[in-house]
Image (cartoon, rainbow, N blue to C red):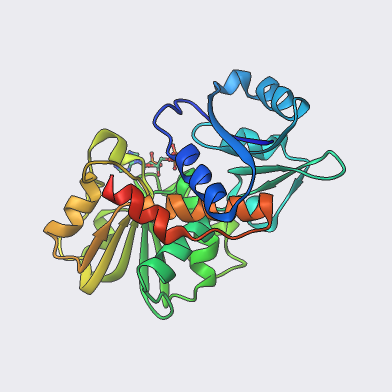
Length: 271
Ligand code: ATR
């Protein structure tokens, strides 16, 4: 049986095994998928061992995505832009292909599951770390009228804007300077949800019918989705849809079959 896994630290609560095994059942693919807890210092050996013992592909999650980027023999263009890899695939010639399906996962959730349109919209991304870098490329390619990037540390936002300058303009700002602006879509790509806090956002930055999207996913409401609801967003959601969609794209890269995501998403939402 073809073997796959998600590597992370911690990884105990990962939903990837459930999601991928649902995809496999649905598409009649024979495969196994497990969660492996791997510390950064053990990553290199874990990857070598996994692929030497017949593994076909892995997903990498926090804090291993940058290490997976280094480990890949070849990178897709979107992985290069992201500076991180969440999907490694063993190729016919024994080399490892590194891809990043996070950005396309987000876009698919926004456009298909939530039926939103991004073209001509004012989009604000909060945070300028690895999570933000993974989504900026596909967001720019969706032709928003403006894409703003707000972060506490301006230098980090400037660095990202420079990396993506060939794809389109990114407006840099700190949180205070957002006062008086209005956005149709606000995406939380900071790690603030992990500590149950929200970036210090001014009031009234949401346009009518605005959508708030937290890249983080939690069984409980995240602090940012709660903020969005308080601020009157038409829709305020967490990143569960993105999680399932990035998994579907990884599954497609490995197996050449695109699974049906809505059924799996509904199953998880029902608990
Ligand atoms: P990740 O890979 O999850 O993006 P990261 O690269 O460490 O993690 O980046 C974390 C991001 O969350 C950064 O943009 C960080 O802001 P700074 O660059 O100014 O440090 C942001 N962040 C974390 N906690 C935050 C908080 N409580 N309020 C606002 N921003 C926060």
